[in-house]
Amino acid sequence: MTRGKFITLEGGEGVGKSTNLNFIKGYLQDHGIAVITTREPGGTQLAEKMRLLLLDAGDESISESTELLLMFAARSQHIGQVIEPALAQGKWVVCDRFTDATYAYQGGGRNMNTNTIKWLENLVQGSLRPDLTLLLDAPVEIGIERVRERGELDRFESEKIDFFERVRQTYLRRAELYPDRIKLIKANRPLSDVQRALVDVLRPLIT
Ligand code: Z5A
Image (tube, rainbow, N blue to C red; front, side, top):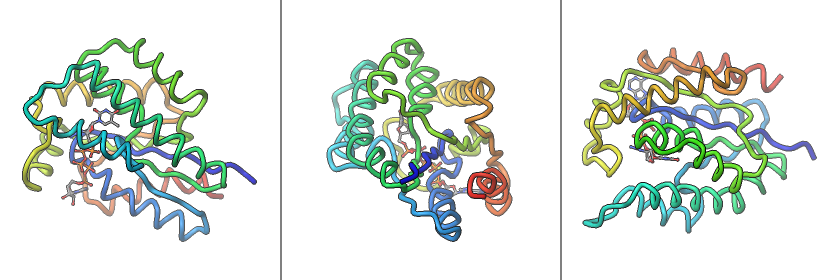
């Protein structure tokens, strides 16, 4: 059985990851590919519980290390229960955020040590890396505006603008570092244009 492909969607707040996850799933299914969609943090019962802790810690503040370890604890569970079994069955996995988000948010946003993140990445993932990462990019203000229109903000969405600027710049730097894997998609344009650009990147994978 040919192993499935692992595709991740990344980007800052409100750039359209969730919106385009289903579009990508539909496009791949139309081309006869068995595909599952999932998200991080989350994707299994236990990891979704960790997601709730991460997004709303109540009155107790979460230390940066706790946040980082919870991200990778959820990821470990997600990989073992969902991602690896699906890939081994030949299914393609399209995941809303993965470890690039840890580099961007915990590394860039919170200024945590990149070597620590890399160490945890190797520990938790072994050799697993995405085959393709679609990085949706838009000016921070645009994404935040879209998210604000949706209503109440979670713990991350309540951060200040310079936090999101650091997140964005870290994502852009990673796209420069890994140009074969990370494809930059401009997201501050009409959805139909964004989706045309996504298809341009996906098409070579399925032929
Ligand atoms: N996090 C972390 O810190 N470290 C990690 O390792 C991981 C995650 C994995 C939860 O993730 C938080 O976890 C996240 C980072 C942190 N921080 N935050 N916040 P999440 O994926 O659930 O969070 P999110 O970025 O907030 O997702 P989001 O707000 O749902 O954004 P989105 O999925 O990119 O956007 P969307 O819901 O598809 O679209 C937002 C709105 O814009 C919606 O009304 C759309 O209809 C609209 N939209 C989308 N595209 C367009 C275009 N092209 N034009 C106009 N309007 C559009």
